[in-house]
Length: 348
Image (cartoon, rainbow, N blue to C red; front, side, top):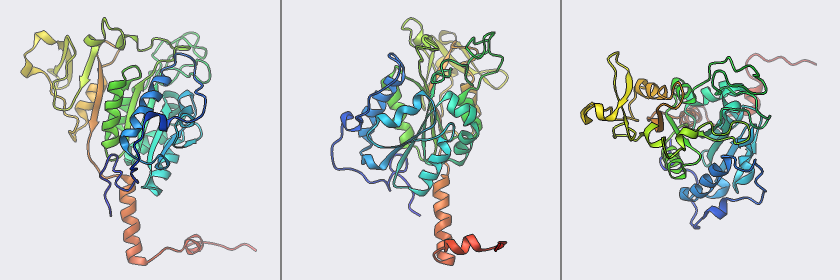
């Protein structure tokens, strides 16, 4: 079995000798999002990042579900598949498992991924399929004009919750870690440098990479993430997650709590030795999960970066090994024999 080693395990994906630029990855389609939408910034960041992979465009595939973010494949000069609501991870799983020569990406939103597509998402994560999943989280249903979503906060007044939402929202990072995801990260649409740095780590990881992107919907949920963009407070509340580095913001630090968990304290109230050092590669997900809870109740302190990045076998890699083993033991398969074998009945 040839293990995948080069960026996303892409040793089987043909490289290109042609120097590529952002322009090469722009399609001829008119970009049609609301003016000011955060999706524009994400699209520009991805288009300018893709040349770094050095892959042929015909070996890159973007699969989307349904939602504003799902227009993404139209705007990239690669192969794309605009699939059905919530099912992009399932379709991408089949593609990645059967075509190791492709770099497969999933574009989804908080409604698409966490409501109707919830089961498909968690099973892709636990299987550790060789995918990059970009989850645009704007805490609202944008395409259908402003209903509350699985990540909308309690009490959110929308067209579908005129007296305020009663649902406890999902935390996408906590959900992914709980589903045994091997790579989990969070970034924000307006910080291109950080967004692209996370994409580099995600594509270098072998297995499923889930990247939550805080994305502003300026029509139906404007300024949902404003504290993280406000120059007056963002440096104080943003806890940067970098492997091997202390977890701090300008004024806060993460330390061990007396109950065995973690807590946020004033940075000048503790010594450097007391501050928790981030270990994204720890096989134990408990600290990564605890970090994912630090943005509760709302933006008092928000971890941004790679929460978890651990190595474990990929679903597609193991499947290929089984196929090789079966072929070695039994020879080439016969599809008609498979279909007609076992308990079958012929009805005249």
